[in-house]
Length: 420
Length: 107
Ligand SMILES: Cc1cc2nc3c(=O)[nH]c(=O)nc-3n(C[C@H](O)[C@H](O)[C@H](O)COP(=O)(O)OP(=O)(O)OC[C@H]3O[C@@H](n4cnc5c(N)ncnc54)[C@H](O)[C@@H]3O)c2cc1C
Ligand code: FES
Image (cartoon, rainbow over all chains, first blue to last red; front, side, top):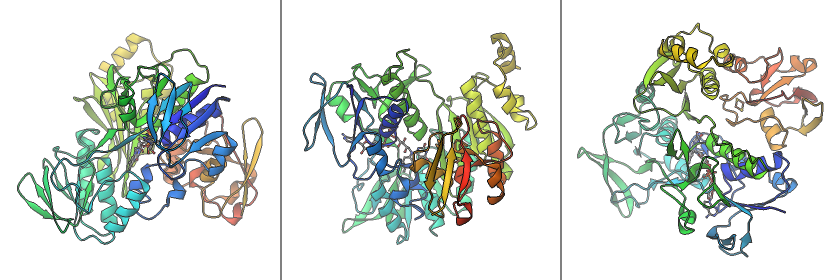
């Protein structure tokens, strides 16, 4: 029987096991996870769980029984120490080595540390695990002055939770707008304004140069402007780094993530890599994405291949992501270009709208604020490769659902549609 | 605990005991009912938890709110009169014995 070993029992790793069983695979499946909890969803760690509305048990991806009834050998609290590619085995911390016919790396990512003096003081927190979330909630409930470093999704979600708990956090961001890496200016400005309304003090274009403390505890944050902010809690949300150490040590090609081909195989065809840890070709560009969708869809893709789909089909699902920040529900689909033109559909003043982004006249990305239907239409359009004209996108009376569902026009008609 | 029945497009039926206060979606997922994808985990953002409440039970659930109504418009499978997003249906004792039908596709 084929032995499939998966390293990492997160969204991607469990996704592989699940998709293998759904497709009727009879392979021997072992999933090895370093964490102690039954596999769980991570997004609520900075949302419901931080607000005390969910416990780690509520976040389980599958019931404990599921693994047994589906013959998935789930080994929790177990770290893979090394991969022996010659011998096709993985070496575990304190168990017998495990042989594999195919190995799937789904090791995820971990928070980037703040590269400044004082980053290891007590009271400086990252958010990546349930215990981080509980600890952060506990500290937020007692904090006087909170500084969040980084205005990406996690930083802004934490800031939103802090305001809900009655705090007025300062958010420090190096870029000149929030969500600069992932969103366009229209969305950034809207989101920044809503956080400011809720009492968040945003410092854009500003770096953190040092954290100061007393008796090992953080007390102040020194900004690049020279200003010194009081802080008894500092939350760091400055991005993540892929957990690709096993792959690097095993001599697999890596470049800030495990490099994979369009079918998600690494430089060793007996090893695949998926989810946050993998860097895959997207529009010709080696790309690493951190989202539930990416983890789940890549898991399904690899499972299909391992179940005998030998079409060599490349992975090409449309990427999407969501974030909830107090009363803001943000959803984005597609991969933005650097110089996108933006078309707004709906009225931002109502708090419900979408931004259609175009690169060279072609739709690349749709961002939605409290407007899930716009997001779903964006997904349909991008999946179908259909690009409404900018006028059509801006016209709320134009039926995008019908447009997305209509058979694709011949190439020339498409051309004139996008350039009209 | 109320019992909720899930019926697949092929007619196969699964009954689950659903704790009061949980969503119908969560019960489907934790009991491994096929066809309820629920990729957003119940945040009313994905419409992949679409079900058809059995017409005989339709009067037992409150009507969808405006957001759910809009999302149902863009669900993958055809919208019918009793279409609902199962993450928005909260189990209570009044739902004992309710039947919901799982559509052909969610994505
Ligand atoms: C606070 C937070 C909020 C988020 N919010 C959202 C959101 O709103 N929407 C969204 O789409 N995405 C969100 N994300 C991102 C999303 O959670 C990740 O993209 C997704 O979990 C990636 O899945 P994965 O399986 O690749 O990695 P993970 O889920 O991180 O799983 C990897 C697992 O592998 C284990 N592992 C690593 N190395 C080893 C080893 N050597 N041996 C054994 N086990 C190992 C790790 O311990 C970990 O449990 C959020 C992430 C965080 C941290
Ligand atoms: S689970 Fe996503 S809308 Fe119900």
